[in-house]
Image (tube, rainbow, N blue to C red; front, side, top):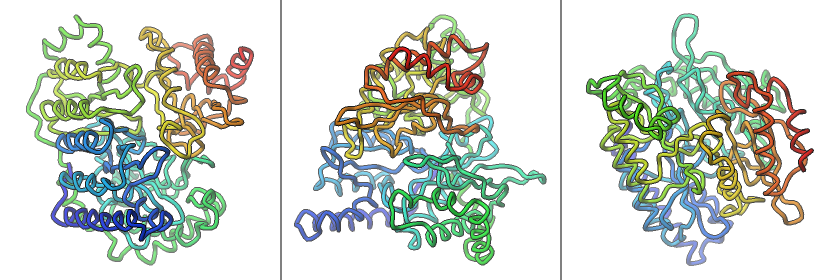
Length: 551
């Protein structure tokens, strides 16, 4: 994994010192809140309902065991003992005191972590596939390109104050685990007719108030032109993106209003002028970055060791966990372990300081010191020997981290909602907990199969409800919390926005409605169909009829 060099370290340290001065000026009254706001946002500090929230960048979702332990230190020293992993592969701390924020950033900087550009109208933290570099289906490791983008975009003077925030995601797999079609720019690594690897460039995706699935801007972009092409795309957005209306300022609106053909002409014209300039990536520069992501040395390990097979046969809990939470690794004798942060009663995505320490310890012992954060608010140990899986499972179970529910109905995505967020209309966490409790019978959950529920407390869609198989949006009705349901969304290769089910429901009725939707699916499905497959085959009508007949 990438390690900061002296330049990176100095840059982050200087940024912390600058922010320390800005905070001192705010506390003294020299800066008003309006003057301070753009400064704190680009340092990852939000003012929420009860306190400040600090959003820490985890570039392309990769974190070392040392860094994970330091996140536990932040949770203990500056928060209330826990953190919240987000759908952008970052972590948020919700109880930060303003006067302590610079100290927290300094502690993060000790291990090469920061909060730069995790908010504000700039290029945000680039995200990727949580299985990058180890997935058996991968064309090429996308983290190399995420790191190149990070270095190019950090404090880019031309793009520090865009019309609106800008999010980029990169996947190296034909099976999209990075949700590239719902980003401002999505990059999918592909091969052309000559078997050369490059990028499909997708633009104008996003959720929020105006959800849109991104459109292909370029079918194949050679690697050496990545930065110049991104620069051209951002320049056109910076030039024409609206600044008079925050709700019309994202690039998706510009692409929608211009049309993809007109936007493409603008980008290609801009690109033609710069493509062979300083941003053209020489092979040696790419190789230098790629060296940081070279596959580690994997000691030879058995593919089906006796102790592992015995655990599979003799322990049903381990067997269930293995079936749900373990994925195929490209290296024989190794596996990818997804750690569920969705245990019963726990807010989705939350981890205590003690759990962070436990994951760090397990990563150090069994995963070459490396951890990943997923878009679905879970964690990953990417380098686990098959022979070590029983011991890893026992270590996770000892800290409440062995829920065997990845991809099942209780593996719910939820934003912090009205419990923390000043923008929210309704609570997300209690609703997620109630739904998980309703479906806490593992035999029933297994019978239901893959079903992705995603909950947002407001239209900003931090919980990605638009692309949930069942999406749930919190709305305010005369001061009461209600929820709208959508069906049929997906963030994968078959990306789609969900269809509105009907009128909003109160909290209790929403939980009942999810139950009704599930039972309707089970009564309609054909063999081997997932919820999404059945919905796409039969449509909205039978689900709507059943839900509203009951309410």
